[in-house]
Length: 190
Image (cartoon, rainbow, N blue to C red; front, side, top):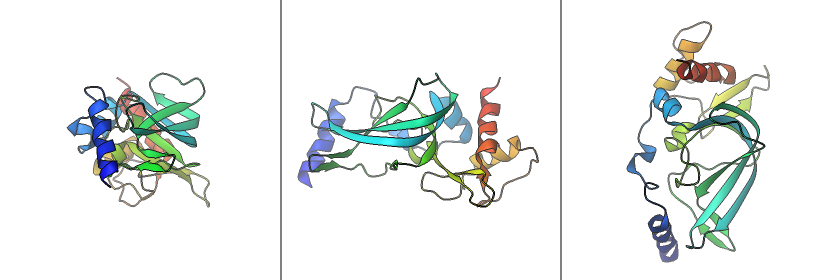
């Protein structure tokens, strides 16, 4: 346990200035997710590779494929997000409060400061959504980072405002990916 704490402190001390910010997991409204994100994309996790930095900190490179970029520069191939934590040669660094990316799962991600932030997703779990296909209708549905119905009032309000039949969504109403993407596009258009 002591070794993990020492590694965590080393990792935080060796991260370039500006990396560790207290605002990383502060509550974010839907508009903040959209405006603060440097890149917004939908992609499936196809690889996850942990490595040790020269400082001793462990990071994991999470690769997203089958991309649909909604904001930011178009990716040539895959997008790789680098997050603090992982396992290398029997050593594990786990950071409490960080949601985990799972292999084979499709996510909608609001990304910021990739390569310089310890968790490059706006608002932590707030900027990370799972996409699941409804087995009955075949529609792609958006769930929160933990695979549960979206309950954030600002997210559901933004989506219901963008829907073709506006009206308040009552969580845990399913949210379609198309409606979510339209809400993002509406916020991005001038």
